[in-house]
Amino acid sequence: MSEFIFGPWPWFIAGPLIAVTMLVFLWIGKRFGVSSNLRTLCAMGGAGAMADFFKFDWRSQTWNLLFVAGSIIGGYLAAFHLSDGSEVQLASDTVVALERLGFQDTGSAFLPDELFGLESGLSLKAILILLLGGVLVGFGARYAGGCTSGHAISGLSELQLPSLLAVVGFFIGGLTMVYGIMPLIF
Image (spheres, rainbow, N blue to C red):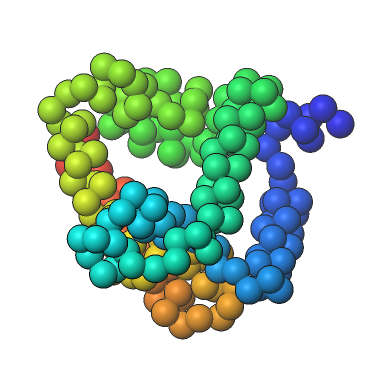
């Protein structure tokens, strides 16, 4: 039993839990998405005085802020209190490809030091990548009318064609990044 609690949950448990969560959201008339929380936070801070986009009833979206806070707390609890500390299981081809790119401890952590360590985060290259990546992700989420979680989980569960097109675009962008741009950066 402890292996189930302290290890990764199998797809046949996690997947139906996500489906049940989406059914509850549909039933109570809520739409799931994480990127909309930035708009809510900006509206809470008074950004409506500067742009009409932020003029809306942000109090109606506080449930979504609580959902994100719960996701952060749940992620922390899972990583530091419900994890057995085992290595990340990666396909051997992935390990070889990452080692070719300079990742030394492939599979030992979800957040490799080469990308997320303090030393790597303070370099000019890392700062530029973070700035450009943040601008592109922010623009993309706004242009697509939502983020990957909102479109892939909520939009697809509602059978929305724009969400399907957005998810296809996300996958194309992700594959382009991993196989085309990332090897040039590293």
